Image (cartoon, rainbow, N blue to C red; front, side):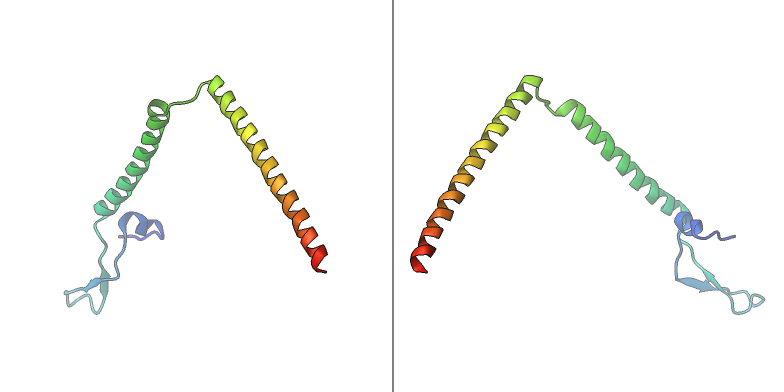
Length: 111
């Protein structure tokens, strides 16, 4: 069997285990054992089919099982997020301003 590297190992696999030839005419040669090529191809096809099934499931879930918001719900949610962000920014600014003034007053009294 002719070996084409590296494709031979992808489709046929390889094994470090081998068997010595029994024929007395062969001399001291060593014949490596290759795993069954059908088994390797089956494993590759199994993994490819799992990937294909994954993407089919993703597409099915996005199309049939996911509930998408309407345009008005999307606008309302965006407004809620903007208002909440502004309120949180004002609260953080207020806390920063008050703590800065308080620490300045304390440091001025100590030093």
